[in-house]
Amino acid sequence: MSAALALAVTEHRNEKNQKLIITPDDFYYELYQEAWDLDTLIMACTQWGKTEWAIVTMLALAEFGLAHFYVLPTENDRNKFLSGKLEKCISFSPYYQDRMRDLPDLEVDNKSMKIYGGVNLTFVGSNAPSGFTMVTADAATIDEEDQCEPANVPMAEERLSFSDYRIRRWISNPTHNGKGISKRWRKSDQRNWNIHHRDVCGHDLKPDFFKHVADITGKPYDKDWRPGLEPRLICDKCGRPVDRKGPGFWEKTADSDIRGYQVSKIFAGKVSLMEIIDRYKEGLQDDVALQRFYNGDLGLPYTAAGTQITKEILDANIDPNYRFPQTHRGQCLIGIDPGSRIHFSIWYQNFDKEKWDLVFAGWTTRKEGLFEVIARYNVCIGAIDAGPELQLVRDLKEKYPWMYSVTYNSGPTARTETKERVNVNDRTMVVNRTFEMDEVKSFFAKKHARLPMNIESHDSGDFYNHMQAPVRTYDEKGDRYTWNEGTDADHYFHTCVYFNQARKLWVYMRNTGGSEGEVRL
Image 1 (cartoon, helix red, strand yellow):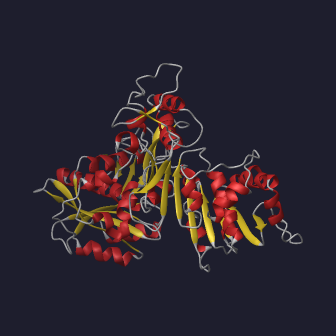
Image 2 (cartoon, helix red, strand yellow; image 1 turned 120 degrees about the vertical axis):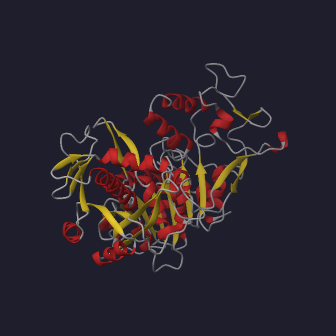
């Protein structure tokens, strides 16, 4: 029995002063027995027992002298975790109280640090970068990673730099595909829970709502179900009922040094299957409710169809026989997203293939780097974000008479105006952000691009990551749809937005020969 499992079943009490009961057939068992002192990721539904596992395993590590750095989304979340969870557990356990009294003369700020058995346990909110300094630890936990400030989360791992152990744990209710814990899940060994059913039909069952609970209309598969009754989990092979809380085992589906567990309310928690079905049926009429059904009940990421450029959409644009050229003789177009790194993408209209070839995509930290790629790929027209690098924009427009600067419309017509306003004289454009990002999504969804082989790993995978970062969501307060990337980098996506403006300008100039004053595209 591991130290964590022993602590859980003998000394721990939850915030309701209840003991934990864990048997070898429970889905909890492996988490306490094997995953307590390893790099571990848990992508899970709500209300499955996360807090108990996080507290017990943290204290078990402290029993061996391992200091802990614990990150929650905000300082307010940290305070609620300490007062509403950890401190209550300590107050109900005489053993914990004794371990907390090992250093009675040491004054500690109980809003950010506890000392357990002489070991520091530090708690911070991800929204306060100052909390990530002046701390050393042996293990770090990121609690509710999808709600944390992504820019600050990597600093938690830096706190482990001088440790011989460097144990990392991520726990979160997921949100969108490829975001937060979902993105990290792909790098784990992706363990799924299987319920024993082999002795009945030779088939162990991995609980799946749409295979074993209900169909896409929300109708239960249980043939004996009637309104007012609780439906049962039904085996998709033999049609017999299965005990959803029955004994089972974890099965890994990928190779990784990081253990990954996906937890669903179908086998965890105390809610009924009927409650889960009802929430799904509500989600059929409400996108927000459907999001919560997937995230909160199934413990799965979810992005509604059509709201994001997915890996599958990008993959469909790849030509396995095409590679990035070293130079280009044909006239090319460029889109530039400036910042500390100046990202760009360069495109060529391939009339033979009836597609736009991505000739090159990359970044530089200096304007001379842009001059080099513009010359190498024979760029004839381009567009760049008008801010924040104002001097760079001025330099490029001065050097290249075909360079236009683009501003997103933030005025009273921002919601309704979809046509680009172009001032040919000063080479500026004002565009609708949502509409233009919709067009980029459509460009790839309609397979108008020709992407080279191995593009998915280009720039250490950043091209694919940036293209998948923005998600189209409904803003209830503003009563409108917007593209939201959170704090994930999306520079390559925006280079495609600016390339799209250059493309429209190029077509306009080619068809009209150009003009003066203001035009609408």
